[in-house]
Image 1: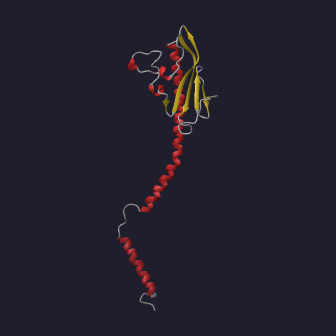
Image 2: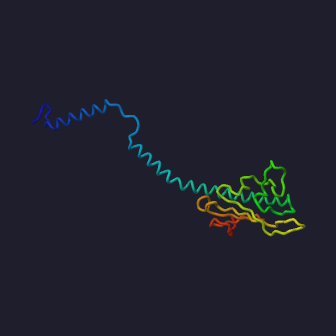
Length: 189
């Protein structure tokens, strides 16, 4: 049977339910903030973006370390030239400590020429380990003279702090070892 509206009672009840629900929706205030699901979705998206960015950050750090190592080798080369001009009887410096030295300890000497800053003479800078060794050492009038030197710069951890090793000598040419060691054979371009 139909009521006054001409609808079946079940349909009438359904229509009344819809009208009441619509009125409730209009009268209730919208909730402030986010639902838990919305927050979880946003956090998941942020985590995915961070995971994509981490390898990029690592490669940028290695690239910066590489540039710093090349600049440091060039600086050591310039320091060696200055050392050989300042101390011609000694020739070239045989260690980074000879190129460094503490200015507060007195004036420059062949053992501490105070040419380079402590950040390079410490032997470690920007993920690379630096060494200087003598070559072609001769003794003249009781004084050892180094007629050549070898600079090496190798990553502290190959693959993490750098991928390439660098070398240079008294010629000033910088060569590299793609394996990260000190067997430098390829000229840097």
